[in-house]
Length: 153
Image (cartoon, rainbow, N blue to C red):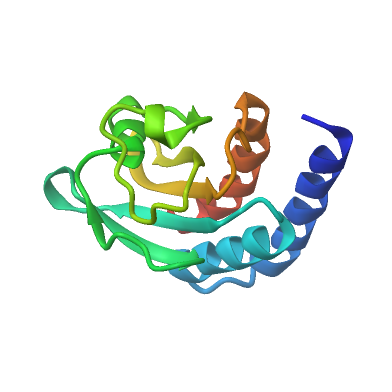
């Protein structure tokens, strides 16, 4: 990851910490704030949002920024991240087996699970309309941002 992106993640974390810690009244409010700031501050984000784990393995769209989203998912990158409880980085979504194309303009993606103990309660899903916009180096800064949700989980 280049220094510009690393610095941007650090500034975003500090801004979100000020906005969320002791101020967000709920999990949904904190998620919405994370989406708004990430989407506005990261120019390669085409879609930034959360999918919440619902009954029987189905994911329902939560707070997000960007074009219309799939309202419910049972497969694809997000579902795979829930099953594996691990972040998934996809450089080219057209090469990912079972990828669900909510918007055909999406070209690359990163999905990071939100954990309550050992259980995945949601995933942060970020798409770009350009190939190869995410790497494993993005995972830890995004996990750090997601740690701001812990008091609400």
